[in-house]
Image (cartoon, rainbow over all chains, first blue to last red; front, side, top):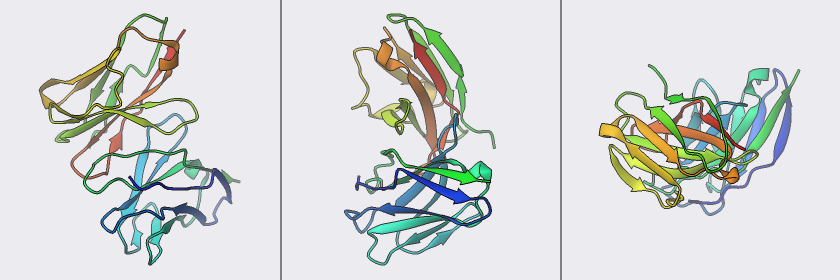
Length: 110
Length: 112
């Protein structure tokens, strides 16, 4: 699996966009970037994934740089319920396995 | 669609006792995973099943941990005997293929 680097923690004001960065400089050409989050006392929840194009779903947007060495998860209008630990993961191609780091603890502040 | 079910949600035991956790996956999901999450850390994969066969158990402490997946559906994870350092949340996840996994709520184990 490619190694990922994320900030330990971030704060975001409620209603503002939360931009969570992730570095994955050793990513291979056929490896996807996955984002999961874990709200306190719950299991991790899948958010979004992408290969090279930007992706958007009902939860978030994923922006991947052209060289694919970094990405940003965007929560467009953060709410208090988005307070969680966010994990950026680059699984080995076809491995179907996730290696979780420590992630970024996002605190949404009223 | 029903999610991944796990039971019990909480368990307190004394060291050297045994304990078992149960997971019922999302219907039709062939891949099932067990993770251990120690406080303050991300989940760590213990074992991966594809249907009722083990794909990867390289990180399962086999001297005390065992797991099985009955008929490719439900799964149990057992610890015997438990140690203090086994105190953690045990998460079950399932998938239909690919790296998108759906997690249950976890079982919180405290070993005294």
